[in-house]
Amino acid sequence: MAVQNIKLKDVLVDDSRFSLRDFLFEFAPEQTCHITSFDAFGILDPIIVYKDDKKRLHLVDGLKRVQFAILNKETMVRATVLPASTPVTDLITLILCNKRYEIEYSAINKIQFIYFASSLNAPESWIMNSLCIPFEFKPHRDFFRECERINNLPKELKLFCHDKKFSYKQLLNLTYHPKDLLSQLIKWKSMLQLTASTLDEIASNLKNYLKRENKKISDFLSEPDIQELFDSSLAPREMTEKLRHLIHLKQFPVLSDKNAKIQKAVDALKLPRGVQVSWDKTLENKNINLSVNISDPLKWRGMLDTLSSDEVKKAIESILDEL
Figure: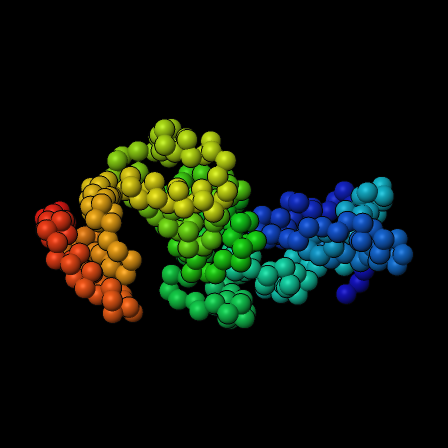
């Protein structure tokens, strides 16, 4: 295909139909490296552009070269001009070949590229066979709808998921939570130790609490114990555990109160080492488990005396009543 000279000002770059600016998290640009290579080897041309039916030129490949040419006040650039009749699938394939490593780096980038292809009206059957399957997704009836939901997650959250390489399933789980809640959680990323599981757990429990109490995230942030927590100097791990605990207490106040009473009764017994009292913290199972772990036969008699004492008997009866 013939190469021709075109005016740089006529090339749509950020506004190009094929710009990945809103569809791909790229690696940190190595501008110096590109400039050095351009200076040394003169690889400024040709760029690849697409001429639409209104004669507008959309940049398809050569963003770094265009940026360098503009930086050096160039007004003309050599380009391969693809006609309006070029199949959109060919253009997407060209971009994929050029950006494959970045696209396949994370699940969120793959999903965003699929959404990019869909936004260009590429046939779903082609996307399925040429993108979804090579990307190792297992497309199903609701796959494109799920991709749209994932793509609509807050941008900062998507970037976090890109850096942490969240899986497709982990990304999909996040779409079931309100956006304002997710946006707030990602603002805490420097203060908390967030993984895919803790992020989903905190979001799920906090969502349930807010819904039950008919509260907004702003109401939660104004609660004194939450303000105190985030004003503290706790390390991320400790702050994460404290936040999880506080949300649990707020979500299950009766459950938490009963568990606290039972634990207090057990602690008051001051049982010897090796004697354990346990129970179902969800309180669904109404049983108490008493276990003895002993290796010294001389201690056996003392443990039996402790377990058969009136104090222990009354405490166990009290705990069973609580359950």
